[in-house]
Image 1 (cartoon, rainbow, N blue to C red):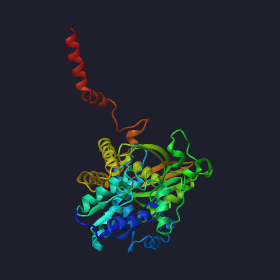
Image 2: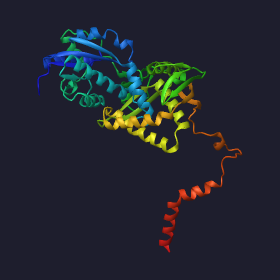
Image 3: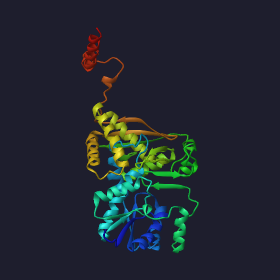
Image 4: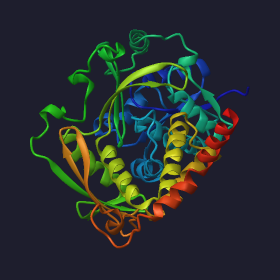
Length: 404
């Protein structure tokens, strides 16, 4: 393997990546460029991050604003598929990783780096997501994964490592929970959650109000959907990121979007996490409501199949693959008529669609009514059912002949 001279590190400013910068310089004798992705994690996490990277030994720090692109080009297409991993998880971390890795690779190619590096552990899904993207986009780059190489195995060891080198760090031993945030969601793992018999406590939830403490009065939001994408909220046209931000605030106030799950990681380990996706939960409910009006039975069934497959592709880090591209294309085609208006009621942790309409709706009150109508001849159903069940009838007749 050729010698590494310049590495672009996916840098978060946390304890792990702060230690990785000097570790890379010492073990690979290379220049380290810090790459920071702004995916909507918030100003607090990004404050002073460039100075922190330089103080840790990086030669430079690049910050890429990916918020709008992530929502428009990764979250919205995923929403169209209806992808929900294992029935509950709206894929918050999973959808952020491909765009971060893509932008990191672009940075590496732009600065002439010959390697990329991430701070993911050897137990989690993110190492697969990052490295799967690297392989698909720039297989010529060397990949360095310190957690699979170094002997620093604890938070205390990392803090000691930095202290020995006089590298400033605001982290402490008291950190209990591991969190990951972006515009779509925030996840919380560790602490009391490591025992599945423990109930989550107030420290496990960051964005959303406890539904029991949410307002006693319900609130409604009106959402306009065009071709499977939210384009306006409460009568105001919004960009994808702004619509999500607006709905995050509304949903969080009412405790919407909380889940506490045990999921199957790709590497075979089960993990427990508390995820908060307030705006995403509202958007998902709105899109599914318009689909109910517009898609026929077979199309809806196929969309559910696409959603199930897409959820695993996205979760498993296979965004930049032909199969994932095909699933997204299928969902986009199905969404061409998914346009309409939905009213969602927010109350005590629930986002409930209470009104929906679409110019493309296949729902007909004339046909669906339980009252008297002049458009449906009930006698026609008999012939349909006889043909529909013909195979079952023939099978039963054959069985009766064999028994004689």
